[in-house]
Image (cartoon, rainbow, N blue to C red):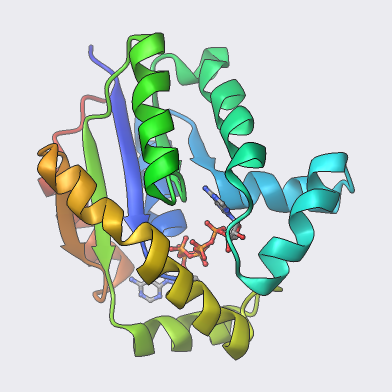
Length: 188
Ligand code: AP5
């Protein structure tokens, strides 16, 4: 059996975490969310958590120097050797290039990059309802801006590499999951 290795791209609130978690459970592979790892570090008040908190609170990207080592370590762990789903990483071209090199070193390949598309207004409504600490209207709008400036260029990056699959995320969660399963040839 070959491994399943997927990246979830998409604006804040597009449903990356929701869908990544479902597929990861289905395939019994780790769901690696950099946002969640960072929030845990903040909750534990670690050195990394203290460094990242202000960026997360403002909706800014945490500096690459703090993210790259963290991802490198996580992907080297034993449970990540037979597949993974990355959610929220990479977030800019520097991170994408770093990941390419890292996967090369680990002799792994990403199978697909899932781009979940959802209109901004739906995103704002969803996130205001959820109410995480960074789900205030001001911070949501900043996160959307950061997404457009720094993360959206990855759509082109992965399209050029023939890895991109775009899916309408503005459907029921079950419909999105069904479309995803059809679009991605899961090897689990
Ligand atoms: P991160 O945790 O990655 O947050 P995000 O990208 O803003 O995404 P969200 O978790 O808000 O949304 P999602 O797309 O996962 O949607 P979800 O499934 O939760 O990052 C947070 C911060 O950490 C960043 O701002 C940055 O500071 C830092 N960070 C993280 N990674 C970084 C990196 N690589 N580099 C630098 N900094 C980094 O769904 C959202 C809501 O919608 C939920 O309530 C859900 O129930 C609902 N929902 C989902 N799908 C549907 C549906 N189909 N219909 C109706 N409701 C739905």
